Image (cartoon, rainbow, N blue to C red; front, side):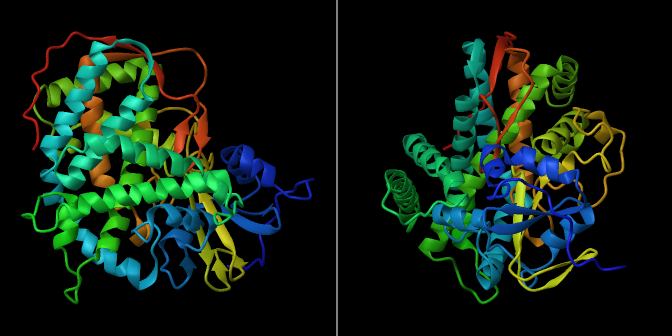
Length: 450
């Protein structure tokens, strides 16, 4: 292969390059850059960064180990201020040690233990929405349900008393995420920085209290219990600070991404009533009113296709970044050491070279087995750093969607097109506003988890 030193430049007339576009609509900037080639150099302020869109290049950046690519980029540095050195942000030996400890916590047997709590929260959300049918923004209801589900799988207890504090602290901290990523200086004593740091400290206090309450208790069959009991190859356990960072990572990653994915699934089903009816009919036939179990995921191909297509069009983790640890080949290019390289799952998932009718919602493309190149669909990342919680997230989504569709019918609130808003995750602009119509189905609630 002939090596080209550098990819083309995305032109800009501004002295600050594409900084204003990054701040105004980064999703649109990635989509525009994609039309310029498989790799593009983009000037943002004083820095030149690379965008890559070819699946082979995406794989090379995300799959190769930390000796070639690191997470020393603005997004991960800022996220580290919020969640510490958890599995998402840690690197090197810290990450490898935590990953070895984490693997048992996400084993299929552990997932089986969450069936009851996932089922209960999904049923309660469905019943609550069926009882208040009408036009409403479902966003707060969905976020609260997913946070409650996350708390139960983490702690084996109802953390409703702490959920409001956790939700408020996360909302405040994440609201400042974009500002800090785009050049904010976190140590300046500004009002917004003080609010940011106060929220992070508040989140730390809540999580530290939940962890401290577990010391001296009998081991619990939950994620925190698995973390506390796990040992690495040298017999070492996580410190309380390590536990706190991983718990915060799960709260942010599990709560934010699953709530965003659920939001997009429901919005798309409301706009495609035939698909909504097919998902409902499949769920009634396969699951009915019994408790959904992980083995059911393979028996729900229509729902699986809907979720995959939703994650293609609106991946919650829409943007991945790495820093080149050395001057090295990247496909037919040579990337200098210290270069920030970005890829957008949103842009690659809609690349017309790899997807037919790329901007359309076509769940059937998954059920008919259309060929998908490696590196062209990566909503959970790729390689060793692929999300460990993907199976749990998919199970939660399936339980929430099947129970909701049994109790309610979802209809659009207006005829406006769906617009993404890129923050830490890809969220629907304007919220999850839908018309909810009760189906009047009587459902027996399962036993409440301890």
